[in-house]
Image (cartoon, rainbow, N blue to C red; front, side, top):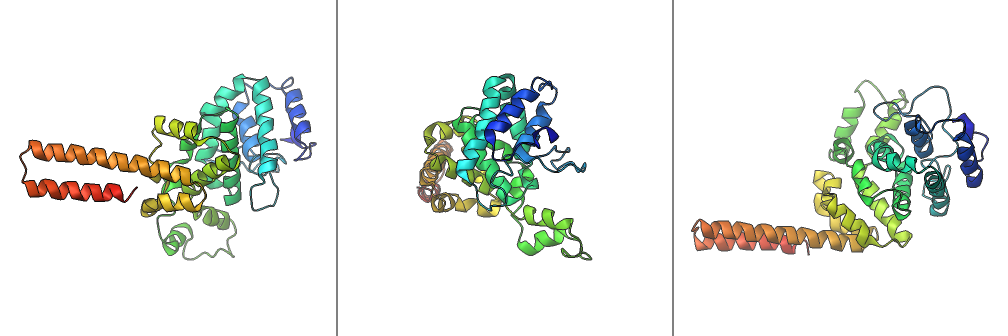
Length: 293
């Protein structure tokens, strides 16, 4: 990290030049994992995703810290930051495969370890990486870990009890505070929404992205949501300004249910079931399908 310390965090040309110069001193193939962890979140990560506390401050340049203390994503700055990655991987092409297949996915899987605004920046950067053809859209699936999805299902007071011992207080025990705040964020759902919002903002065509999702088995967008919020997928996407994604999801869900209706009715007919039972089953399934239209 100290190699980049002399570069102002927003001087992206200097950062690219420094990374280029470092390639002649370091074998990036040996340090790919550490390199991308530093460039993505500003530090080396321990197994499990926590930042290694070795007395070294976080790198002044990283995706997670682009925009400084602002609590929103600065998309113009983020485009410049992701361009650093693009230049690096266009010059050292062997880095792109490992970044796409391993190291970005690794960091996305640990997204819950970072502050909400840092998660939002990672989501925006991932959309920009997709636009630049550095990674496939299906990389978003890496954020869908059990912990990232299920966190957020329990009521507020139950999550508090699970994270904070009864004898402790947030004020008296500061180390617990970051864990508490981040764990309540609901990681996978907002990450998915912010990813799509960024694609819309940069006017990236959604059809290829959604096709990539379908091919990767990610069409069930409700699986990014906690189980108690899975009925809210369509309204959540619409209210977030990504109505096209909501329509795509709803259409796919309705088609899936209709296929299940057909299969169920055929099975009942084949079993010579009572006609009333066949009608009831057909009506119930179709009502469910129409609710997703």
